[in-house]
Each structure stands twice: as C-alpha cells, then as structure tokens.
Image 1 (tube, rainbow, N blue to C red):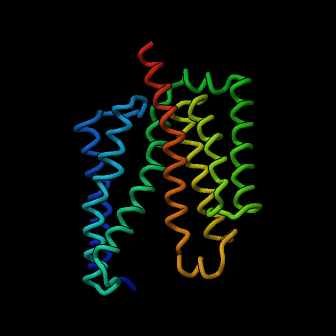
Image 2: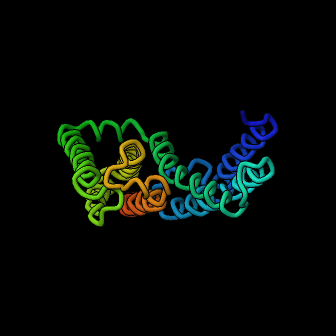
Length: 224
C-alpha cells in the first residue's frame, strides 16, 4: 500500500544512482570498463560503489521520512546507501567481466585441467561456506576467514571473471542461509538485526580479498 508518489520517488532514486554510476564510470574511468586494471577497479570503487548511491539514498531516505515510513533521515540514508553500495560491489563486477569475456577466454576456461580446477574450487567454496555457516557460529564465526583462501584462489587462478563469480556465489549462499535459517544466531540477534552489519562487512571484505589479486594479475598480464 505504498502511495504512488512515494513509489515514483523510490523509482527515481534507483534510476539516479544507476545512471550516475554509469555516467561517472564512462566519463572518468573507461568507456567500456573491464576491471582488469587497478585504475579501473579503484575508479569503480570510488564512483560506482561509493559516490553514485549517495544521491539515490538521499532521495529514498527523504521519501521514507516525508511519507512517515521512517523517523530518521540519517539512519535511512545510511541503510539505503550501504545496501546499494554492497549490491553494486558484489553484482556489477561479475556483469562487467562476463560481458568482456572473449571466445579465447572461454576456450581457456574450457580446457580439461582448468575446468576440473574450477569445479574443485566451487566445491571447496561451497564446502567451506557451509561448514562455518552450520558447524560453527554462522556469520558471526571468527573462523569465516577460511573462505578468504578460496576466494583468493579464484582471483589468482581465474582472474577478474573468477573473482566476480566466486564472490557473487558466496554472497548469495551466505545471505540466503543466514536470513532463512539464522544459523548460529540467537532469537535476540535475529530480532534486533544486529547480525546484518557483520554479514555485510564480511561480504565486502571477502569480495575485496578476491578482487585485489585478480586485478593485480590482470594488469600484469596486460603489460606482458
């Protein structure tokens, strides 16, 4: 039962942050970014992840306060901005790198040894993630850093596309099982939502750990 003006303002906020992020990337970074260089990746973080959601968050937070859905502009802005920034960081790199993948890249990934290694990597990623989610303390477990080794493996061996695919798969699995089954969380933690910042921060850290070596290796290959 959201009022039509509020729904239109929400749509405007989403459109503003998407178009501004695309324009900033094309204007100041690259017309067709592939995130294979450190310059492109840092530009992506600055413009698409950090700056572009700010205006959309302001429109969204103002709408929430104006129509009585929220009593705090600052809190609503922070939640909106943080959610969009994390979504852009986890989803957009995979889209950009997948669209930039050439037939030669696909043939290289399809080589028997590479395909086998990719399958082993996926099993390891799902296995380690499931272990800390269900056997340890879930997203609050201090041992969730084990997943970082698998994500770094993906970035070093499969480049930007591997890092993007691994971090996206990891984020989907962690978010789904944490929010659906609340593994390792007490009812009080679920009710208060205090686990959400831990989940978001963990996913951001793991994504960066996978992307940084992938970008370094990609830039090295471009200069060779």
